[in-house]
Length: 489
Image (cartoon, rainbow, N blue to C red):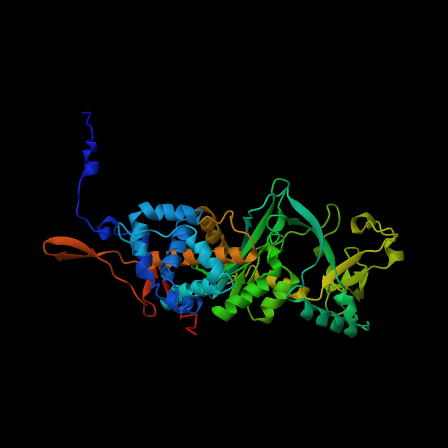
């Protein structure tokens, strides 16, 4: 039977509280129960003056930005529009029906005047991580590292070409020392300091709109100015640390400072898993020296088609030489300033070899095989790759760090940015990952409303779970009973 709804209900007067309008299991209720935001006052007390007009409550400002990043709202202007009509957001902020919502420019002005050159957002990020650790949700014995590109707010066709100095790598000093030591051990003169200090330059495209972004080229169709968000996550998907760089920075340059950040703030992991971009002599050397197990993938040989591959040459560690597939010896020649030891074949013998075309295209018929001074660490990582304890660690990447980036882009607005500059992008990274951690913690610790019979009416009462005792938290079939990882200092 056809029925019609009476629209006169729009004018109905109802006596109701704001709390009654917020669903019992709404995410804002879970977040409010998961963490006490009053810690913000201690972080910002030195940023405010003792005189002048009363400011907007800093907790309100932080909660506004968390609404934006948790629910994937694209801008503060749109966030304020949502708060004006969304009763759950008003409840989360502590506003009533008729309280005036701040102007959308309020946060921007406070950022420029108070928060811009501070570590406020980093402290908020680690405070949330500390709370998760106290509740035994962090499991950081295995750390998963990766990066993703975030499209910059810059036109890819508006740029200037510039010559800039190549960035110094974190391991450069250690490498130079070992290169000279290796040369001396083989009767070669060490390189003078100016050999390493010689300024190396490269040509880059610099955006006229956002000079701090980097031109990123993935393929013929993907060319854009972007930033790289590097992050480390634990096996439960909590982000433990993040670093933001221009989009043209190679992933392998950031692993060492990122792992150092995790060690300082959280603790030293037992293993670090990363994709093929991080499988370099410098990274494997760093991890083994830190007594951290690398969990890295198999990488295919990159030899030109039709030529013998690197593994066809046998390295003799005792005599420090290579044997070619034809049985000829390639003797050590020198160690170059990039850290590669060069092994060369005898020219007169190779010139008459029947398989010369598969060895080299060199005009002087000499084959050169290179081996990095840290190559043994790469080989050991390859050996561990199939170990029964290491193989499952790498397999967890898709469930941890890759899932974090997927959620950040699809649900939290991290696919592209409207902000410009490394400082603001670092703020966005910290707040996005803090929102992800907070959302995960809120969902995992939420017990739901406890129903109580009061005056004949059933009303919801919400419980804050609070810190859990060791071994008390269960998710699915797994128990997480690790000790707190973050210090309260």
